[in-house]
Image (cartoon, rainbow, N blue to C red; front, top):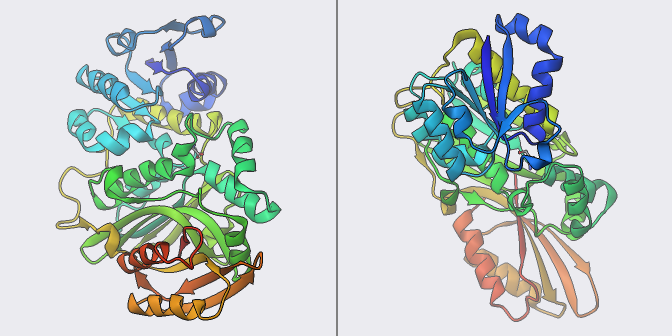
Length: 419
Ligand code: HSE
């Protein structure tokens, strides 16, 4: 009998308990041993007074319990779970977590602490999609060329609604929250931070790269308006928040931002709250993983899969899938050295010579225009929509800064990268 303690019995934790009970037959057959949740930890006992579990408010009741084999950490946050998980590992207990923020900051320290004690985290990226397993095990023969993922269901739901139903940004956020996908603080979702945490986890497995969220380019979807959606539709693009990890020689670029992506790409067809991750390996080519990225049962499905895996063998491969440098000399590419095609939206004074001044500025900064569209607005201002050929991030940022200081440019320009 394998005994489990669940720290954090909220939506996902309750689903873990339910799945282990309701799917006992297949779980026991697959694990080769019975698995039982012995106890749980919650913040507020009063709110859980009808629970059938033995509950306490102190994580030590689980991490110091000699009968517990596997600690499941579902508390959220960074510092507190780090202390709890560290203690559990030092006490020799296997750990399963769904906590992407914890891993975005502490994955390498945790790998060092865990050594050959099992530490699994499938649910931390794209909820129910077994992407960690695919990348760490199924694709382990490959050099990874790139990863592109829709890894935040809240943003994807909002962008899909804006695209399909013409709904304005502010009106949809509340809907996404009511569906239960959004983080407690939704700026984590719409600001791109949740997707960035997930990207950093995948990039460690793929490239062995050790970067913190502060070191990579992270932008959200707050600036997207119906003008941008209309441009996207006119030119055959979908608008998606993507996490991108891409190898370029001995550098790896890591970035999260809204993208215009051709509607013919597979990843552009992933709509609503669903997540999707495309991985290109040098031997396998492109593989695509699709499924629910959030929600109690879908996330718990991944947590329980990790529990079963640990119950089978008692240990796992090194947490990140390697125990020596993965690829020598790979470095994080500087944010301003990234290159891309860009879309820019400007609101300008509608009078003679304005367009000439703007295009002259583009030329001065090595930006070559690919398409241009002018939309008349209220008689005073016009909307100019540009797409560019491939340009350097530092050049486009310089152009945006220069545009901001021009009197004939009314509002802050909007920029979206084109994939
Ligand atoms: N807030 C996340 C999302 C939940 O919207 O995808 C899963 O990490």
